[in-house]
Length: 328
Image 1: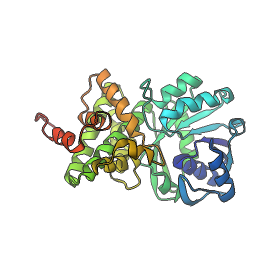
Image 2 (image 1 turned 90 degrees about the vertical axis):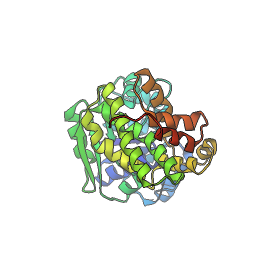
Image 3 (image 1 turned 180 degrees about the vertical axis):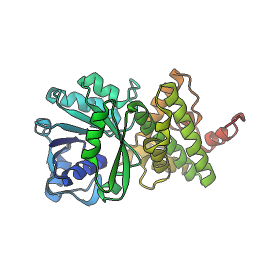
Image 4 (image 1 turned 120 degrees about the vertical axis):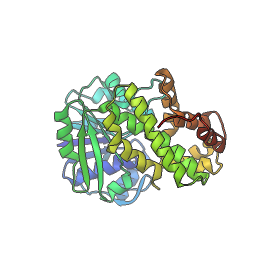
């Protein structure tokens, strides 16, 4: 089986490497000529996944045609805000045989589309799955125990992909709640920024636990309004991913929050990020989505105010605590 992975960041590299080690014919499409040169010369992604030596069978290319030619599975590992641009670039090389597995987590700013919506609009394909869970790329690349969810409306496809991606250290579960898995993966990044801000302000572990718990409540609230399955938000792609992203030292979104809480300006933080923190854009998208459907999401709104209304983090989090009292 031939597999094409698109996106030379940490996650695309880690998944391509995982599949190559299973003896699949895997090509990793890398747009950057500089990164392509590093990969071919050193077989280490020094920019996004340093210190991890990649499987000798993994191939690298900057040719879309070469990558997609004869491929059955296409792994999309690009930030959601760049997904449309990427799909337009590969569109002429896509056929009905291709199966798309998206790994990015976010909501497109302009349209408020989830990845499945973007893929459907640009490529008009039915073979789509979303891979999501509490998965740090570095730990997967190091073969540390990890579990994830593969969601598709076609459960036969989900089961097929479950077996393709499974390894003794990468346990795969299936779901048919594509909407819920995508929403959970996107919205948890916003809560992670809130938790990082709280930690940056040294507000304590009680505050972090409260933000995680109440963050999950508002994620479920929006999911229910959009007809996602409630149980999805209590699983790996929901609570699992939320907990990891809000507490893990490798979390880019928590790191953004930490630096905001310590007084750094957002513009300076963005300039110094090596990898994209999806929660920054998702805070804006989620706020628009919540207001469109009249869903109360106070933590999301608070993060939006800090990121885009230049409100002081301590002031905003204090206002959260002083909201009117109510039942849990």
